[in-house]
Length: 471
Image (cartoon, rainbow, N blue to C red; front, side, top):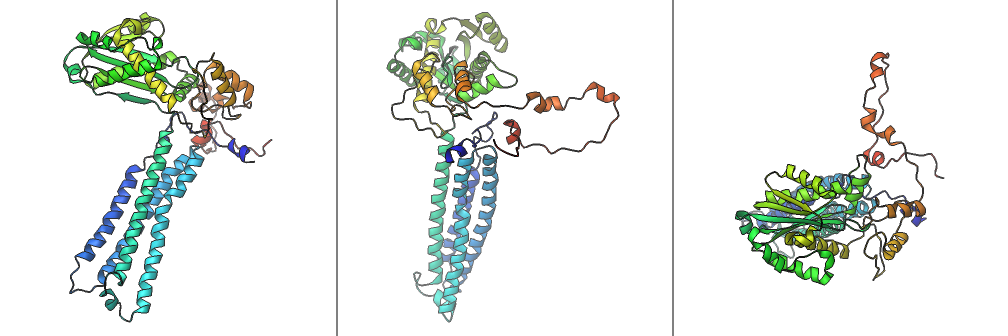
């Protein structure tokens, strides 16, 4: 029964990825900060309380302050529930349930401490004829000291909660492989003043597994020979160890070399190629290259020449880039990574980044692969890759995010191994078609229509409908 329930778990992301990050860090920091400030204020009031005044008055200030903390905690608790509920609606069921248990801790602790503080004060009232005399005793024996000790323990528990909450959220976000990632070096000062050349190349365009990575590398025009001396060449002709050594050298030459890479997730590739308005892999590649060039220009690099390995017909690609960047001299050529050192360096940056991302890949779907599991090169014709695809498929939700669903190899295995699905007609559910007014409607008699309730995005995005029975 438990294995059957796993198949009812919805997909763990949406095309927009709007719930991949839950913005609760700042409100959590603010809550802890205000709580600690209130409790430190209570301690400060006690320490500086004049000896000739009533010694029990700080006790009541403690209680007033704790009531304020409880009110603040109620607001904090409702905010977290609102944010975490969006995760639940979007399908992160396991994560949202665990996060719900963790985030409920502050309100539970503060409420429990309210009861304990009330019990402590009531006990002192009952066991002492005059509360004021009890307050005048030493700190360890007075009700003020007891309340102060309880508040200190409470503060420690809240700090531990905050650390646990941050760790749990960070683990969740680290495992999110559905988003693209851009990493960049600092722009060398010399590249801001002298004219520079920039090379662009990719790694992982053909594999069915893992991300595609676009990389750029740039340097002053008169430093091209220095980049070549670092060992820049077509990354496919180098061993993994040699690529890492050259990349390390590129990173160390911060005085005249800059680089940047964009890791394009398999999820992004699949969504682009399978969405209604399909976006080809060439378009995804072009957008990444254009974006990296623009980011480098925006960062202040004085780029005047750009060299790229071709994606599609070289003439059309070069014309497209020249129209977007008329101020740059653009050269698109086949085997550019073997011809131009900066393109070779970009190729190495991209390849090292892809290899690294695969080596530390975290399966947020809960897949535990045996140690030493090998998925091969990731290319569709690799027997090890095919074996991985055959043995890591869910009958309902298909493959983990490592796999590019849009590849024909994956589609073929899905048809053979996965459960056959029947989806509603896309046209029937397309709001753009539904909202179009037919020309014949202007000539027909208008009738009153009963408003229909709009379906929640969670169901409409997944084409889910309610059923009366399960077969």
